[in-house]
Amino acid sequence: MIGKISIGKDFGGCIKYLLEGRNGEKKDLAELLHYNNCCGDKNELAQQFRDVKALNRKIEKPVWHTSLSFAHNDKLSKHQLIEISEKLAKKFGFEKNQYLVVQHHDTKHQHIHIVSNRVGFDSKAISTSKNYQKVSDFSRRIEKEYNLEQVLSPEKFLGKDRKEIPRLDKRKDQIKEIINEALSKSKSYDDFKSFVEKNNLKIEKGRGIAFIDNKGVRLKGSQIGFSLKKIQNILSLTKIYRPELIIKKVISKALDYER
Image (cartoon, rainbow, N blue to C red; front, side, top):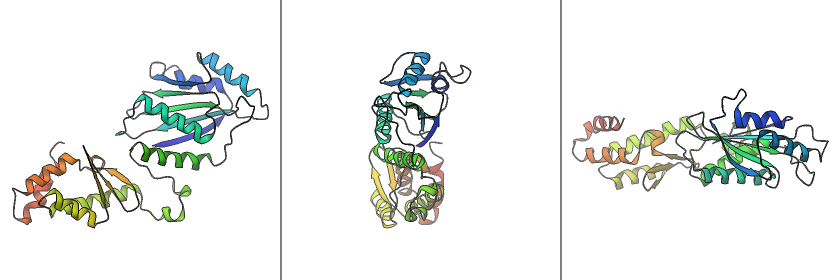
């Protein structure tokens, strides 16, 4: 999940973009999921936000706009999207302020927008300090909580120990190599599991399969080309095709299965 935060001056422009797009192109592709302490159409909403903002005239940029984009394989219900937006509001301290949540259906991956009034009904304004680091930390927590595809935080926000972790694409290649080798040397799922775990990978197996490396990063098998069904197909073929020298060919053949 990738989270972005921007701060602005114009409630009217931001709300119009969320509900209609810049030139009306999103009017049929925008779905309003949730109101919090506000209601109405774009003009009524903008005016309500301005009225509350007037309680604190020191704030020049009262518009808080967050976008949350999910990976292609992540599929969340409307209830979950609203729940995540509520958790974000609580994280940043605007859960009692005016805000609305809009989902845009103009891309293949799910993404939502949250626009909030930084100024609350008590006239106090929420802080914008370390927003980028906070939204990155929030994204990592939500990924784990909702079993989503994990994305590494920008390197400048990582601690010293985390900066030493290889980037995600490199890590995927390392995990794939271990799985390939495990399959080429295994006659059963138990053999496969034992080999994988000896190479510092944990396995989560249910309806599907996932692998967790020694840094705690979790990857679904389908993300790296090894769904549970594909692994089972390969293992069933290795029982038929012997000797060991031809197993790699069998694996290659099985990997083409389901494509």
